[in-house]
Image (cartoon, rainbow, N blue to C red; front, side, top):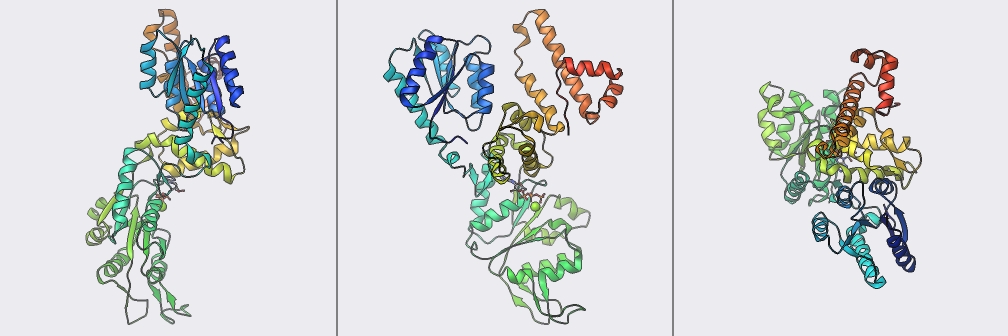
Length: 465
Ligand SMILES: Nc1ncnc2c1ncn2[C@@H]1O[C@H](COP(=O)(O)OP(=O)(O)OP(=O)(O)O)[C@@H](O)[C@H]1O
Ligand SMILES: [Mg+2]
């Protein structure tokens, strides 16, 4: 994110006088200043560079200052906004402040001191809000689990409340929602934090191996058992065992596991004696255990032992508010790892991420970000660096940003509406056919070259995978 050595100001105005005035203020204070004449250029600048403060003239012509303000507010790491307005336009000022602007400056600008003071305050506020981003750590969330949505806050509250106790916890959620991360967070904030946290994936192992891993064996217990081996339960003594993919544990092992939980003891394979062990058990699954129980695949008594506290992790699409902040944290992680520091994401690409449904949840987002960083040239991830299935989401966003058709005359409105229809249709059909032009043109009942012309006319960007 922005390094704060030198605050940078973006001025959005068409007034030469204001530009001259503010340039003077900035150079006196050693703040860098960039200026653009309209909102579209401003969005471009904001997608590619970090700014501390944006000063927006309320009187911009095309998209008005308020709309630009609304757009800025949706960004994660966003500059503070100061509005430049006529003394007469109190209504606009009130709206702007309501929408999250820091403050306003009244035109004409006359007092250098007053203007300097206000911008300085805006810079201070930016620093207050973003200190953690400055050194690149500590994204909002809990124990490295990033998120600020109400659903994740509820998860954090649950984690906090179970940490102190020794109760078993069952963590459910779709694949890639962060189940293992949650188990680790619980362990790390519990009294057992200095004891082992042992992870075992129940789906990854054949039954006999799973048994010897969990319980260990004594020398000579079976062919190949040349020495005694400690099981994972013993290793985890006084700590925690995380049983991942618990739904896949075979029935015979379910019985043995139940005994461990009920008796608090384990017996190595081949041994006649049991050992007392003290472990906390956390288990995770992306399956519906209730239906596994009803079809006989999972023991109900074991379920109740594991499910003392249930934590269900929301799917990413149900907390899309968290996508920008997750994206920023993953950018941070992977730009460092891939040796491409400072790569940012353009706004349209971020919108596409927010509109996509994420069946693979955070893990899928992680893969997409990593791949996009690799593919990006220059210092910005653009929509082109995203997989095509995600790209089509951009369209929906562009519709949202279309002005109200009723504000246009008939001819203009019709043109826009047709444009929207054509883009939607083309992207939809290309999506269906995996962006294969031949297949798509067939489905559309057009010949290939005409179809290509339409693609070009409605400027649908073709994806190269
Ligand atoms: N809220 C989050 N903040 C940051 N990173 C996250 C978050 N949730 C998941 N991740 C990351 O996404 C990846 C998948 O998380 P994790 O392995 O915990 O998910 P899982 O639910 O166990 O998935 P699976 O069912 O596929 O095993 C990990 O790299 C993890 O660090
Ligand atoms: Mg997992």
